[in-house]
Length: 147
Length: 120
Image (cartoon, rainbow over all chains, first blue to last red; front, side, top):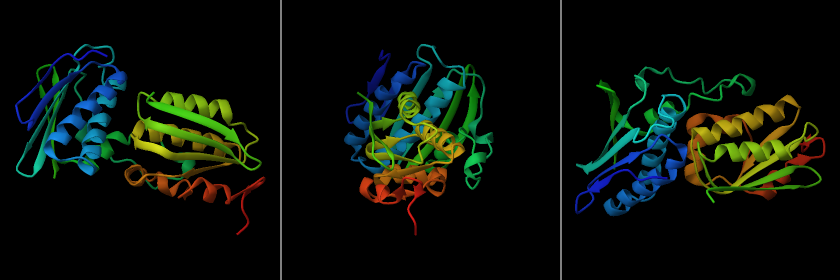
């Protein structure tokens, strides 16, 4: 695991970090989110929800978005202000707007349930004010978690 | 280690005790252990999640895959010991409607017989 870049201000109300395109980086992501949430007094449910939403986006980018094996493939910025954590998730993968993904059929019987497609659903369940745009070679998704 | 799975076998069920986090990095290990322990003859498989504090959709996908395989052979997957936040992720996914959930391993085992579910 290689930490490429980490910067934060003195009170850690903002935190930026970079992940390589490797699922082993999940542990690194979880450590950074934990550190941010501890500094903001957001342990417990907010930490779990932030971790899960970022995990789902990162895992999708690595497994399906062309980020696997790419150094510094994902950049994440967390910003706590005004009763919410604002998250910016950027990845160098193929252009993909997760907000166009149709919701999964959660009532399908076992034999018909698809094994994938839940990740984006989780993000939409947890986060608010999701917005996507493509900036050059980056997919950028911004969203907020009310705290 | 991020994830460990300890398997055992009782008269009525295979029990897989899962500890750690179940995500895109570790889910393949859960799948590997499931394949190692579960046979077509098993009527009841219990996933004991009391040592799990975190699960993502990748982890749920492995649970769903195991459940489908067991169902194909006429068996049942039972899940026990979900922490509150892990239970919430199951609820997000609807998997809480596909598999019977129990508070404890003992409660899950008491729902099993050698032929499958306990008589009501």
